[in-house]
Length: 353
Length: 274
Ligand SMILES: Nc1ncnc2c1ncn2[C@@H]1O[C@H](COP(=O)(O)OP(=O)(O)OP(=O)(O)O)[C@@H](O)[C@H]1O
Ligand SMILES: [Mg+2]
Image (cartoon, rainbow over all chains, first blue to last red; front, side, top):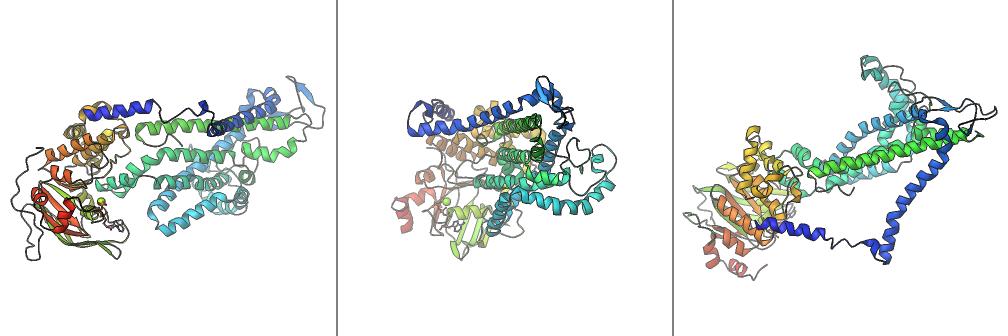
């Protein structure tokens, strides 16, 4: 029928790209500025990678692939004469492994998201849908204030207030009542003084909430009213509208926001350094274990690493940084894939995050 | 001629105080209806009977309250701040404006098609089934059949049968509107409210939608708000002229357009009033 022909025509117009002139092909000032704007970030990423790589190269050679699996963190003896292995000068007995830091980084960030994601999405729905306009803007202001608090303040609060309270009043309950079976076993054991994996994951979660919640709130308000009203007019309950219309409409965007939050948690340094217990060289074995992350270890270890006359300690930190960067990039790639899958099924949005 | 006007005995008259007995074949009866937002009164004392199984056109200048009235029938205005109603709207004797009205059931019986297509973010097939599932109208085994039947009804089956699981957003605007119509039809409504349903469509899609309404009458009563007088004349059996929140005049479409009684109606249909 002719309706079909009309849409085929539309597609052809799109394909000729009449409205997408090749910006690089024209030498107008705007084209040049756009060209710079698009290439600068790419160059920056590549430059950072190359600098890190060149700095880390001796450590990569010395630590080998075991760096990824080893749990050792022993800078060696700085006062004895340096030794040379594989052409790399290093303090005697130096042995490094990033595995505990990598595990700590991933575990704390994932636990943080497990807390933050439902809370953020729930808060966003309440702010966008349930609150009267005045309360809504007050709640939004607090959300933005929360995003602006320096991480050192979160760290201080976690170490001085949240950690002690939780370890005194909340953690012991779980520690005593969790059954000694797989998974729940992680909740047993010594709850310590409040520094450790769970406390820092909670602090990270609170830091991530404003990122996910404010984006989700904006996404919810951007869902066309006509579509939600259409669902109401068809006899959907409020919950059905939320579940079948609003949420699918925003899900690609929520995934994007979640990855932003995840990247923030992966790279968060100060707060984790203050609440983790800063323990190197052991993989956390319960949810309360003291531990450290790559980012926190870099900042807590840099001072002493600089006293390594052979440079290996600093080069090893650069190697760890390289791995952190790789993990962050990987998370972004995974998110892009996820967003694409979600939006290719039925969503009108989601291509441009 | 596009259609044979189904016979309808008795004019839809503007009812006056004396004759408020409900007419036999009225699907919707409106009595002393007043609607407003906060202190502003938008609909002033409307009384009317909507004849069952016809296409009824609501016409009138912008701001005369057509949309407000339409959205009050399926209670879609309830959530809007300051909205209030007085008087009564009843669907086959059942009061719709009461606190106890089952809104979900009301909206199954009284569907709505909007000014622009509004497919849900789910596959074409799931769009057609959305209301069926929400109201649990049919077992799963009948779902495929319902999808096919309703898409055929709106003439979309051939175009989409190979991509039932695809996104509805890749369909053309006209096709999307037909899909929304199929979605509304799938829950077997008694009344369908349409608020300028073709104003965002190209002429060919407009014709497709108009033909459909004529085809689906008299199983369903259509109440169509339109700014196109030509369209009102083409598709409707009865026309109601809203003016400044009042029902100025109503009657058989042919009569309204050839022999309007009120001066406002005369001005409006001669195109001298926005
Ligand atoms: N949410 C609202 N709050 C306050 N006033 C409203 C609201 N919605 C509509 N109105 C007012 O009610 C009156 C009627 O509006 P309505 O949209 O029903 O007119 P209409 O006949 O549908 O007009 P149009 O032909 O332009 O669609 C207008 O004066 C409008 O300003
Ligand atoms: Mg209107």
